[in-house]
Length: 615
Image 1 (cartoon, rainbow, N blue to C red):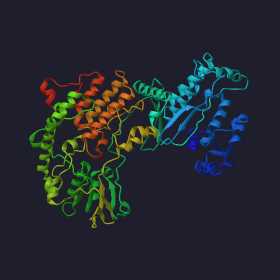
Image 2 (image 1 turned 90 degrees about the horizontal axis):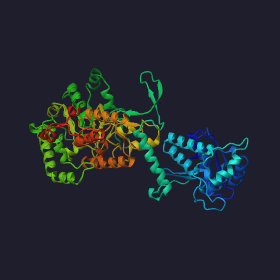
Image 3 (image 1 turned 45 degrees about the vertical axis):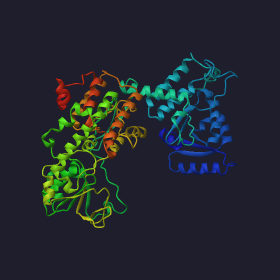
Image 4 (image 1 turned 90 degrees about the vertical axis):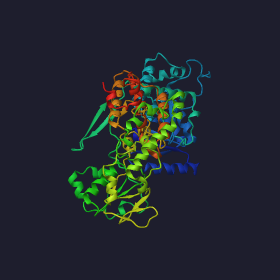
């Protein structure tokens, strides 16, 4: 970590402080590790020094040191010596950083001042705590906050109006000719806090954490009033030239179904490299024009892995080109309730799932006791609606005959945004033989002849394998950011959806909005109303709540997504079954009336759509 710190902060030299002449085993291992890491940073100078010599050199020639790393045993010795030449313990900042956690505090032992109680009014020096807070801001990727705090400390010291007793004693020395006050940034890197619990933080740390939350949410709600700027690097894909921009607010509209393909994990020696034919992702196929795509699949035995929109469309195109002479094989890992049309048994899906009454049957984020009881009471009706649609799909597509009945309910599918419209004539092609379905093949590999399913020796002979296995939308969003901290923030944990307030704002990433990542049954108008909500926010017509409040709301929505979706599909951030409830929240934020229809019947039983939010 010291070398990484030096590299990131443009420091030129790292010094290892040790006592290996006596502590041969412990400090010997320390030096061995130090030299190994140093070899990976050839641009940074390094040296080694005994701790007693180091303390003497600090007093006589402190300018020779830059970044210092010591075992815990000597850290306080070096820190206290450094404090003596930098203005006393009251001005030395410190941080203890591990792999997952960090604590920032005064960097040297405080002792007392003139044998008086240091906690008496106006006796304790707050500079170390404030500068440690600035270091914490930099660690959390808030450099503008750190700059402002450090500038304020320097200004107060220069004014000379407010000085604690230890500073008064040192001011005369600071003001002598040729002597300048330098605020040194000294880090003490200790062992990782792998089992650190936030509740063990003292009151100072909790206060700093609270201040950070207030600053972050204030900055997010008020634009650039705190001087925050985004550095955005944009590459022209035609000329490959790159331009850098500084902007006050960034709106990310990259979607989730492009650029980063989801390639399945294959068993050892059973991946694309073993195949004598060609393996591509549906993304590559979709880039081809009609003529190129036709020539690409013509006369080939094509195997398509995946059974959602892209997979079915590609299978239809291949069967149109090749017919029953070269049937297209579709490997289905998970059967879905893909709909033949939007009118099950002649009744519009909109009247079943896209009105206010349908949302009364679902437990909602932030619902009160009455709505919770109502959702529980109406659960049999919720089940009946789902079975009604399932019976139509099963009848229409003869799913039982093909062994394609899904285990999850239609409501689970809808709540996961995994429902697709089946291309017209798809199952007719299955019956005639130009499309072959391989059911419930969750695990598979690829040999030189084609796809081989788990537990089967014979391969499905293929000339071309097309992976319609979706995209890694979260990875795509994550790697937009250069900052590892923001990458961690935006991705969230592996067992939660992307943590976005109103499916748009990350509480801990100020002055940034994400549009079009969260899904709905009608993505376009859902994104449009979020754009309007964002415009009202930027115009100052309402303010974001605190990070704590936003986090609580995000947790409620995450609980809902896990309850009604299935498998890992909750990470798709789907709000299809509660899109009206979501839009109601946006409307209330903007000061709009959330009830958009005229008349009681229309409000509760007619489907909601884009025109209801126009104007």
